Figure 1 (cartoon, rainbow, N blue to C red):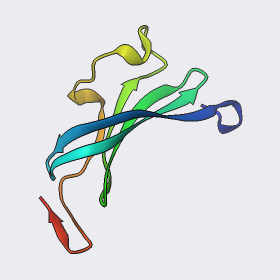
Figure 2: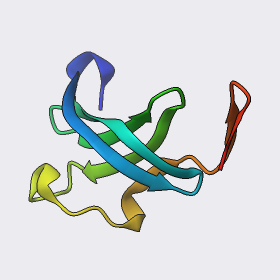
Figure 3: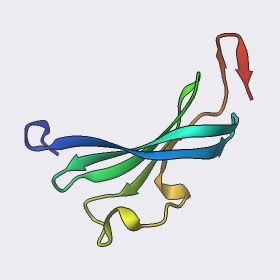
Figure 4: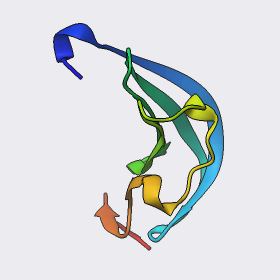
Amino acid sequence: VDPEESDLIFNYLGTETVTVPAGTFDHCLKIQADIGPGGYTDHLYFAKDVGLIKAERVSTDDDDEGWFLLVDSMELLAELHSATINGVDYP
């Protein structure tokens, strides 16, 4: 996608409990990032005092059904496996 011809839109979708290899995090902010036109949609999960813990692609320009597709492991972009933040170890 040409950066001069695309839009980046972020939407707050609420909070969720998210489990990644680094642990289970309650009340994570779920943000939808849309790049368009003809781009893709990602969901980003942020844990309080930790930051981004998971990112997943929920649609691409090849998808016929848009962002409504169920996510499988092939669409996982990143997840937190371990970290030490402000003296706290995860997991």
